[in-house]
Figure 1 (tube, rainbow, N blue to C red):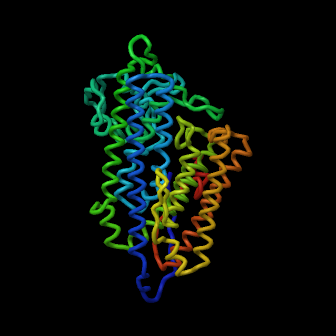
Figure 2: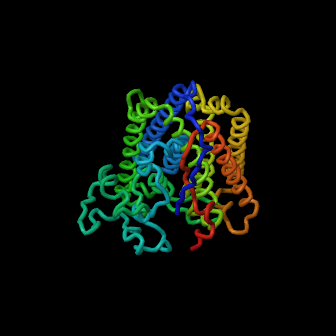
Figure 3: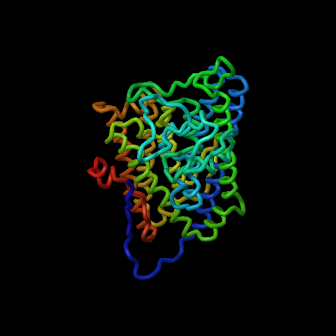
Length: 418
């Protein structure tokens, strides 16, 4: 459903000289990325500790602690999403850790209303947890042990179907919360802690295998984050690629900001849900944590422009910023873009505040909820407006042919319903 919004800056008769400060700006961009991925890894390790405690002693308290650890793990990770666009090394990897939406029936039991296999996905209700052996693409798969390799090498995007998400944050989210069967009414998934219990206390069947899957998915998330953190460390591929070509680094920064602002966040993650009135379009749909995901995405965009990031321990990484480059070229553009970024974060913050006060994001998507729609669309409008200011920043820096991700929901609304 995605299209491409292409920006063409004003042509210059002669090439503009390289601006002083680009290497420092890009180095700070890399430093922030490293810090945010390292924080994501640290929080994933804390999640693993909570998952281990849940499986060692299943109870309502240990399940709730694991859920809270998952929510905390999303805070730094969502602030890294702005690095996905413009950095192929991240975009090629991201589907392993943050792919959505997923056909949860691939993983575990689902409500009968969910349905079964379809022409679009033969494995939509495979339920790997209940099947120690199954057939995939004509091959018998031994799943007697649920391991990270089984999830990543066999199940994830099986048959090249994107909805067959077997790994990452959202697979873990589903295992911790279960399906959210509330539609656009209030309430998240209500998986009972007894789904991880032993013996006669087990509900849902296959509690031991459910625990194996949860543990394997969490271990895999950690190893994936370890790998990505290393790419931004001294000598890592991402770090070396960007710092060796500061001009390309600046383009990557602007590409990430514009694509996440416009096509991904404003379009695919927000306006599409409003148009369809569909809670399945929530990013964190099982946990009702979407308000936080959107907010920290917006914060991550601003982090890149202002060149600052607050770590989970409260320390701050900061340095030369894209803002300073744009201000040197056109102070008015910098002022407008900074104000636009602050406005989008504020609008996303309003959604977060309302959700935390008891009106969840899926309720805002309900047909006829004019107040909820207005909240979401105010943020969408702010993100679209800031993208126009990002275009102006591109022009101010004399850059050309930067492609931003688009979305039918913004570019061709009628196509959404075809």
